[in-house]
Length: 117
Ligand SMILES: [Cu+2]
Image 1 (tube, rainbow, N blue to C red):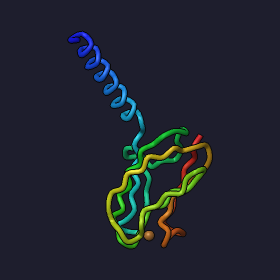
Image 2 (image 1 turned 180 degrees about the vertical axis):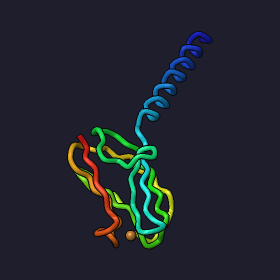
Image 3 (image 1 turned 90 degrees about the vertical axis):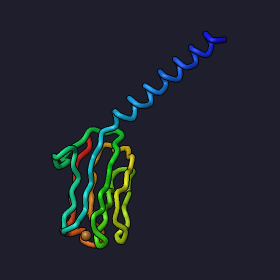
Image 4 (image 1 turned 45 degrees about the vertical axis):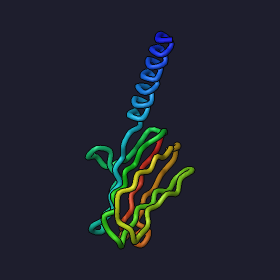
């Protein structure tokens, strides 16, 4: 009985390690719009220009109530609201192609894009 319980605990531990390492492997991107008329998408401190296809976690900091952050591309169209400010976390799967991000009310000046290969 004790041996069974120990084996179960060991299995649970192994499963936990697997889950933690699997989630840690998802690369993090940071999207920011505002407070001025700027919108950026960065990996670390570098502006994103190209990425490998796959799963990403994107933390959006929407710093203004007149701007928003919209990301569009193959299989994806996600946005924050224009009014609400805040931090939003998206988990997305990026596919090969070109992705664009804009602030909807100011899409002609607040925009960027990157390629996924
Ligand atoms: Cu804007």
